[in-house]
Length: 161
Image (cartoon, rainbow, N blue to C red; front, side, top):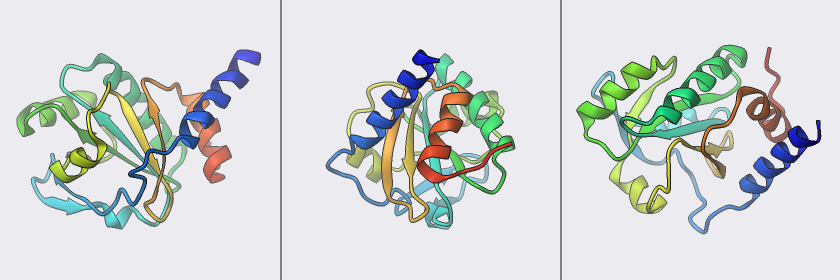
C-alpha cells in the first residue's frame, strides 16, 4: 500500500513540474501514419489527452501501448489517446505502430513540436494535456494501468471501468 501511494505521489510530482514551454499541445500538425494525411490535433480539445511518444525498436513502448489500449477500452469517450512517433522515418514509425496494434491513432511527430520539446531523453514518454489542449505534465517511462488510471482519476476526475 505504501509503495503504491509513493508511486502515485511521484507521478503527481512529475506532473507538477511543467517545463517553460508549457502551452497548447494541440496546435501542431502531424503526419497520420495510417491515412498519410497531415492533421492538426485541435479536434482533441474536447477532453483530456495522453500523447505517448514512441520510437522504433522500443520494447517499453510496446508495453506502454498495451496499457494505453487497455485504458482506451476502460475509459471510453473520456480521454483522447494518441501515439506520436519520434527518432525514425515515416516507414519505420508506421511499422512500429502496426506492431504495437494500437487501438488509437498514431502520428509522426511534427518538427515544430520536436523543436519545442527538445531532446527526448527516453521513450516511452507520455505528454498529458487538459481538455483545452494545454500541457499539464509528462510521464517518463513505462507506467502500469492501475497507477495511470488512479492518476487520471485524481487529475481529471475520469471514471474508468
